[in-house]
Every structure is written in C-alpha cells, then in structure tokens.
Amino acid sequence: MASSTPRSWLARASVLALLALTAASCTNDDGNGGKGADDGAFDNMPALSDATSLYDGWPGNSKLPDEGKADATYPKLFDAPTQWQSPIKSQGSRGVCSIFSAIGLMEHLYIKEGTLANPDFSEQFLQWSVKEEVRSFRNTSGSSSSYNLQAINRYGVVEERYDPYETNEWDSSDDEECTGEDDQPTKCYTNGEPDAEAMEAERWHLPSGRWVSSRRDSIKAHMVSTEQAVVVGGDFFYQSWNHGASKLTVDKDYFRKGYVTSPNAEDEADSSGDRRAGHSFVLVGWDDDLEVQKRDGEGNKLTDDNGDPIMEKGFFLFRNSWGTGSFGTENPYGAGYGWIGMDYVEDHLTAYVSDEPNVDLTEECNDDVDNDFDGDVDCDDSDCDGSGACDAGSIDIHSYTDATDIPDNDADGIEMDLDVQQGGQIAGLSVTVDISHTYIGDLTVVLMRDGAGDVVLHDKAGAGADDLRKTFSVADFNGLDASAIYTLVVMDDAKQDVGTVNSWSVEIATDGGGGGGTTTEAYASRDDVAIPDNDPTGAFSNIDVDDRGTIRAMKATVDIDHPYKGDLTVKLQQVGAPGESILVEADASSGNFGSRTFVVDDFVGEEAQGTWRLTVVDEAASDAGTLEGWSLEITY
Image: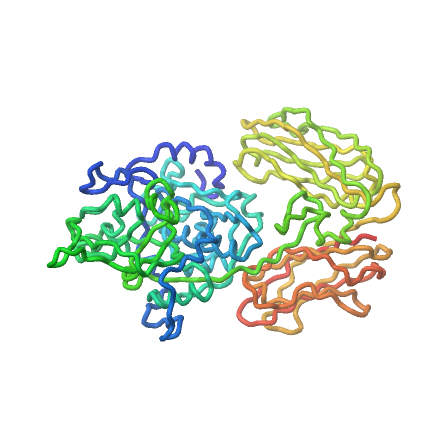
C-alpha cells in the first residue's frame, strides 16, 4: 500500500483486526489477574509508551517554580475537575498514551468552557499532526505533552467523526514497509494519513501549554486556582500498576480499584534497563486521607513490628486510557479511573497544563447545522440577521428519491433531474447527496441549472473512502429565479468499484417571492499576500465590485494561514469612502486563523459599487502568515 493512501481505505480491515487481537498485542479490557493471582496471569497487558519520549522538553522540577504560596493550605479531598470529563477511552494496543492524555485534557477544558457540551476530538489525527505537522517523534509511537499541546495550539485537531481512532498500529499487512522493526517510516506510527474530508474539517485549538512542577503542592495549587486537570507522564513501574508483564507479584484487587502505589526497590529494578516503559494520564483530583497498604517484591502486604499495616497515604485521582473493562472497575469515580500515590507523581513524573479555549463560532445560515452550538439553527440564530438566506421568503427542500445505479468507468455518467417550482430569487442554495460507492475517489459530481451553467461539487477527492454523504453550499446561482430544472450528474471515471445514488436534494432559500426584492452576488480574490510580521501597515487585498445597488446585507469570508490568530487585526473598507469595519481585533488568543466568515453590518444602506479593501495587520513579533484569499457576499 502506498504511503499516501488515506486511512479510510483500511477502515474495514481495521475492524476485522480488532477482532483478532492477541494476548501479546493487548488491550486492557479483558483479564485482571497477574502473577500469583488465583484466577491466572493477565492474558492481556495494557499498552505502554516509550519513557524517554515523555520527558522530552521537561526542564525538571528544580527549574520550575512552585505554583502556590508556601503557607497555602488545600482541602484534604478535591475533585472539582471530575464534573467536566469526557468518557474514558481505550488506547488499545498502541503506545500512544500521551496522545490520549492530551485529548483527555483538551476535551475537559472544552467541556469546562461550556460551548461544546460533548466534545469528541480525534486521537488519530493528533498522532499524525505531532509527527507530520510539528515534525517530532517521527520514528516512534511516543510523544510528549509539550509537543502534543504545541500541535493542538498551532495546528488544531478535528473531531473524532472525521478521523476515527484505530486500535492497532499498522503492520506489514497494511503496508509492506511496516515491519515492526526500529526506525520504520512515520506512516507506520500514524496509520497513514488523514483522508481528504478530515483534512478539510474544522480544527479545534487550545491556548499554549506549559510545564508545571509535579510537586504535590504545585499540582494542588494549580487545580484549586483553576479547577482544571493536569497531564502527567513518566516512568512506569510494573508491580505498582499491577500490570500483567510484571515479574513481581501483583494484586488483582488493587487493579480493580485502580490503586497505583509508589514503587519499592524491587519494582524499580524490575522496571529498569531493557524493560523501561512509560505512561501518561490526567490527574483530576486528590484524597489526602486515602491509605493503601504497601507491598514487598513478593507481593506481601507490609506490617511493622507490632503487626500493624504499613500504609501509603495521600493519592491523586486520575483518568486512565485503558478503557473501562478491567482497570478501576471498582473505583468510586467510575470504571477507568484510578488513584496514584503522590510520592510516585512527585518523584517520577512530569506535569503539563493548558487553559480553557477561546471559542468564537459563527452560524452558517443555510446548512441545517447548529454551527455555533447555541441551540439555534440557521435563520433562528441571531448571527443570521440580515443574511440573504434568511430574508422573508421561503426555504424549501426538493428531493430526488429514486435509487439510481452509477455506470462504471463511463465518462457520461448518470443524469437525474429535479423540476423545482418555487417562487422568488435564490438567496441561498445547498445540495445534499447520498451516494453509496466503494471508492469515492473515482467520482465526479456536478450540479447543473438550466440556462446557468454547472458547478462541480466533488472532483475525485477522498481516494479509497466509502460512500459520499455530504451537503454542499452553492453560491453560483444566487439572484436567479428559484424555479428551474436542476440536474445532478454523477460520473465514475475508473474501473472496478461501483455505486448507487440513493437520493439527492436541493434546498433553496428565496428572498420573498415574485422575483423582486433582493439579489445576492459573490466576489472573490484568491491571490496569496504575505503579511509582514509586527508591522502596523500590514498587508491588503482589493476586490472590485462593478455592480451598482444599495447594500442590504454583507458577509466577508477571510482565509488566513497564521499560527497565532490573536496577533492579527483585520479591517474592511471601501476605498475612497469614510469609515471602516473592524472584523477582528488582535486579542493574543492562540491557534491558527484559518477560514472565518463575518456578518458585516457597517455598510448596510451604502452603495456597493467600488473597490473594497481588506487589510490585515500583524501586531506582534515572531510569527508570520499569509492572506490566502477572501470574498464578499453582498445582498442588494
């Protein structure tokens, strides 16, 4: 298989592979015994990471300040962050625990911020981004918190639905170069590349992260002051975790309760050298009064000279990435949660934090999706006030429901007509297709309107992905009469893979009927313009509008590649006319700017004809970017 093949090609194979997991490849959702356990050894051992990677970039506790004041006191029990946690997941047999802990922290911070009630971000995509976009850890499964958060901050992560996690790492059955030996190609650790849909999907970001001291009071100070979780990672001790690969006796009851005690000397020796491994997870609270009896290398519970148990006291509460089938099944906070000794954290682990995201979402007004997650969809959302798609008129859906086979390797394809009878002029139009096909990279999909040309909706994208079920926004016919014959053309340009158009529909929003009222036109500039770094003059790009008319509504869409959107101020003006509209003002927020659409009210009632100028000013040093294009949508 070629290295450029998207992961969707292997979706079915991955499902089958899950069913074939062996004891050696291990998930943790079966088995909870261990050496000396009366129900046998662990048959499935939770996957571990490379310990060295987890320390990459860590300055050490001695160089990190304490987070709190020396005389600060903290509650004995603290679990506030647990109310903002996403469901526990399993990393399966891949050594990507630090990816899971980073996504766990990210989802926690988004839940706490409140815009997204149930965020579900893609671990698969983050693993690829760290290695291919950040260009770190390219020849290992592992990574570190600082690089993971750098990828989330600078490049962003898509939702899980666009790039679902694959539980098994690629082997030679997926790609002949993935032999399992050292120094494999990067694709073997990322399971290939995200497909086209994932690459085009919206990316979500976090603010820049930072190392904090893993001393118990520093972690407590951060948690109490922010009510936020902390990612930790470092050396893994087999008996401490009651892991199936331990050469020392482990305790199945401790495993079910999620108890991870500080290592004894025998465990430290057993876990060193060629057996050294690492693990990363998310701390979400603590209990100063929790006590767990210590053990020796034989697994015996330790007592003092009086026969009283020798206890380890003080544990952090954490969420793990080994699923919910065995580890922590008896933890009071839920299956998959655990308790780890504070001494263990302080002596052997690193700690990393980020902050809540600055979520700035805008509603798209004709896609039947709640884009800004506020409960209001399309024209019911105040973001769409003044949008041509929401002017008084009608929004009608016209559907073609006769399943139609697509001829294989036929340049003419199949044509399907819709006779639309709807009054008014088009203010917004979208097309939804439901196509079953075993290789959508073979397909070209075109929408035609009689007398108005055609629009290519899908052009052989997606490679080996199955099925094309998607909604496309089309602005090319805005301002024309809604009543017309619309034709969907689907062509299969290659052999072997076949499919069926199950249905398709066109949704049209009109301006109020009768052919009068408003007309909406779109204008664009696609020239790349470099944005000078830390320069008050900035860069600009012009669009000439030749049409005359009074502006009733306006939207501006801006595409900028810049890693720190908070550096930028973006302004729109009509050259030679007074006034300007500030679309974005620099606010030091992090994350790439990307593509953003703004509803512009400042010019309503003004004449549209003239030269419109978009100016982008980078107001801080160090990061540069490019204005990759922009467009205006004007309703007259």
